[in-house]
Length: 151
Image 1 (cartoon, rainbow, N blue to C red):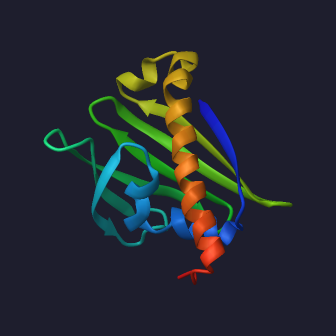
Image 2 (tube, one colour):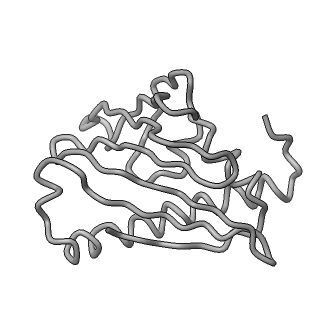
Image 3 (tube, one colour):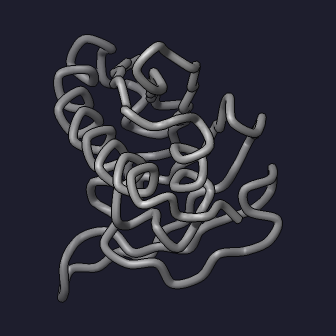
């Protein structure tokens, strides 16, 4: 399992406003290039984002679905990594003195990707997930500074 963490200088409300806006998914998830649709009940369990991965002309249509959601605390997603299998990504947030500490974990759950030794998978996932958290940080901090209303 790969684990990354980041201190975001915003509160959990701003972090989850970004995490739960399905239309922003491609703005912070490395590899997601465009959103095709967001199915209700996103961000509740069962909701899905239909997105494309890659760059034209090599786009692959894929989906991400919500497995579990605790507002302002935790969101667990099931990701498809075609043709490599499925994985689970979890975001956990806790308030910190200077903002919000976010921990992101990712692990393969099925398919060829799940056969990759954990240490090797972590070497591949850690840099990508660090960048994902960096993008999430930028969006949440900008939202916090600008006082963008939630909802």
